[in-house]
Image (cartoon, rainbow over all chains, first blue to last red; front, side, top):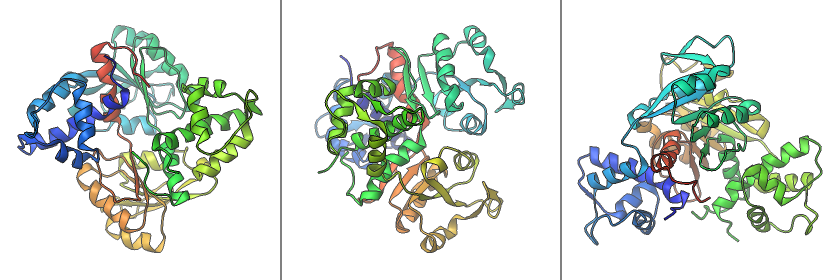
Length: 211
Length: 211
């Protein structure tokens, strides 16, 4: 059965909330309470989880640890993922230095840049390699995920290179609508688009959006 | 009429693609071609735009400039928006230095941090002020939008302060499910959640997600 991508995208949120509850020693949580934490309706949570089987008993809530383990297994969060970051400028450095990746199993294993002044220097104790050698390097040391933090005009070329190296998940920080072949995941991180989606409501003094 | 937020979120994409076409001298574009650029179906584009009236004539395509102007007006992109950034660490600095904001009318007008070593220094020629004084500063010089780049454990407090200052749109980089009152927009930028939404497909070797 094919599960809608919007459902998949909510599961990491549930896992994060459950991990917090678990670390606070909570054993059971209701969909009501989980929903309050996350601004999601309890019905939505129950429906999303129903795609993956039956969790929890009617009126008894979810076993926190068990549901968390199950979500981690479903999402593939119980292993390490190797990442190559392309673009080691100000943005690339901020991403590579972000402390939230490692605890979640995301390890930045390679870093590339095309600026001769940058190549050979280190970013979080990782030597920056020449983007021209990306395909050679990654064919010897494959990665699972590519993070693209290069300027807009070279982003599609970098993405094509990553795809040729067998990378099947790309997080794109460049402000372009990139193209990837079927079977390759791509998500964009784009603060300008996010801001532009909010100014609509500021401008029109409209009510909150329907979620 | 209330327009679904997913529709509003796609409009900036359309505006960006139209701006590129316009700067290339294109006068007319079909929903088919626009869709190809953006990995969106032509039917989706036509349906999204139909919320806002009639654009283009059947079989004639859209007038690029006219549709672009209209989308800018709808989204409120034809004016300047003042932004306060809270958190001037590595991430805050990368955000403040991002060159993509200004051309789109987003001006970072204030920057705050709670680190005494940071307060008084500059970030893109903006003097960093003490987060403790945020409410005083913003009550005298209001901003439209807040960008939150502080650690998770202080993010909700900062968001509450911004809301008290009348900020009605917040872009949150902290990895928490923040709460805001009705009428306040919040969007999150969270690379870990984005990666976790993709590992599902890597793990299961499943086909592309339904979009």
